[in-house]
Structure formats: C-alpha cells, structure tokens
Image (cartoon, rainbow, N blue to C red; front, side, top):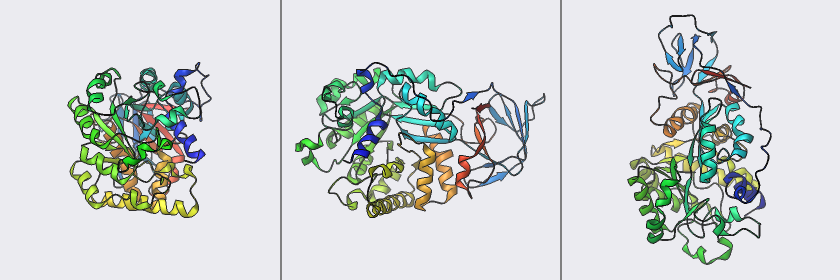
Length: 428
C-alpha cells in the first residue's frame, strides 16, 4: 500500500493510539468555530425550497419553536426575510466518516461540517471511551449531529489492526484487541465476546470485510491486520446484532465482500467496492453483479458511496480513469436495481460536500438526484424517527439559504448565505 494511502487510513480511523500517550493540545479548527443563537421565530417570504426533484415556490413559510409551520405567529417574528430569488435546501449528511469521533478530531473538523452545510453525520469505528466523551459535545446546538459506531468487529488479522499499529515497534495487535476493535475468529468468540457489545453503547454495529474471497491471504504475513472477518462468521454476527436491535453496517472492499454482506442481512454497505484496487488485482474483482445489486434492492440494503478518497491512493492517470469507470458502472448498476444510495465521504480532511462534487464529476446521476441523496435520503436514513429534510408542517426547521440554484451551480453550496439548525441561526 502506498505511503499516502496509509497516512489517509491512519488519520481517518482516529483510533487507539491516543490511549497510549498524554492528551495532545486541541488543534486550531480548520474553519472558525460556529455559535448558535437561541431559537428564533422567522417569517420566510417568497420561499422556494428543494422537494427532492426541484425547487418549488409556495409562498410564505414560518419558523416557530424550532419547526416549520404555515400558520402565522401571533406576535411579530424575530426575523422577517424576503427570499425572492434565493433557495432553501435541507442540510447535507455524511454517512461515513471518522474525524468527529475524538475530541481532537472534533475540535479540528466540526466547524468544517457546518461551513459546508453538513449538519448530520455517522462516525464509523470509534473507540468507546472517546465516543462517550464526544456524545454530549455533539448534542450541543452549534455542533453537527452525530451517530457513533463504537462496535467495530474484525478478525485477529483484520483491518484496522495494521493501521493502528503502524510503524510503532512498541505497539502490538493485543493493545487494540477488544479495546479499539472487537476481534472474533469463530462462533466461540462470538458467544464469549458478545456481552462486550452492550457496554459500548453503540448506535450501529460495523463489520470489517476485505477480500473474503481470498482465504489464502491469511497465510501471507504482509497481509496481517489488513483483512476482515471470515465469511462463515458474518451472518451469525448480523443475526445476533439484529436480535439485539442494532443496525449493521459492513465495509466491503471487493464485489465478493459486497455479495457476502448483502446475503448476510446487513442494513448498509459502508462504501462502494472499488475505492482502490489492491495490488495485483483487476477491475473485475470489484464489479458488482446485476444479481447482487438486485438482491440488495430486494433486501433493502442501502449503499454508502464514499469514493472521494480514491485520489489519495495516487494511481496513475490511466489507473484513476479505470477506477472512475468502475465506480460509475457500479453506481449505474445499483441505480438500475433501485438500491438506496446514501452520501458518505470517508475523508479525514473533508466532508460530504467533497463526495457530492466527486459524484457529480462522474456524470452518473443528475443534480436533482444527487441533492436528494445528500439532503433528504441520507439524513432520514441516519435519523429515521425524526421529521427532518422537509419543509412541511411540523418538520424540524433546519436549512441552508443559497443565493443561486445548486441544480445549476453546485458550487453555490460553497457560498451559503445562512445556516439555520432547529430554528437557531448558526454564525461564525
């Protein structure tokens, strides 16, 4: 694996090593911190908002007690705005990242999420103690709202053990086993270690799958810590997790991993197969079959995109073109099968906005579909019990105000005029 790719993965995981050293000073944020006002009443005249297909204008919209309403408040609204020629968009969501699951990462990157209009996120594979520290911080009004996966299950030679150990000679796999990650090698481990799951108070259970079709790699010392769960253990783990009411997300590096995840009954696949090609492998290894796509649709398995990190693996121009072609083919096959797609970036120094632009550059989906996935489908998938990503009566009043139509100018998302979160103005 190339050096740049390893650096990306180490930074992305944000796990473990902090427990072996003194706490580092909190870093300067990537963008100035945001603060939230008290909840405000608002009158939004001439509002036109995104409904999943386009922007519709339906007159005046009000905000009262953090929610949208068509009923005019009795008193004078605290903010009266004429939005003629401007556009209201639900906030974006990032369904796959790691950089808000530690105090250090949150201090460094949380403001970037709000800057880019990303109000909702899922952090996958956080160390339980760090996640416990993060939950009250992420619940504050001027913070992105975050789901945390603090149960990350892999094999004794699986990801992310190699990345956690890195080049530090003093670190061993045992330093992270059943701490930063849970390690299972068979049904005995599943039965013995499952009680550890409840204590981690996780929102999701994440399973690591990598090259499940190549068991011979377990005999290669160079692959230690870079593989995933044994195929025969995946379905029993999923069954146990669902019996306990957990949603299950599985990382799938190859097409075989994708098929295994779907057939095992997971709820989500953490990223599209084909983020990069393992050394000595061909694109066919990562091409999702029509049958697998149809099965995912039948089982209501959602797929998180997470392709924008490909550029960090420094492929040649020809290699990158092949990679992008494969990603486009996989996306088309999933769309044809009507598989639900969710937006996720898996970028240690980026947000869902970068993923949105990357998907747009592939030309597979029209802008309305992209925006629907980013601002409606993904937020609702993360928080299905809440009335978000809508402008109807009683919906949470969280929105972005844009000067130009993002269907024509996607970069308008980089020029947000106003951010409102549950009726509170966010300002820097």
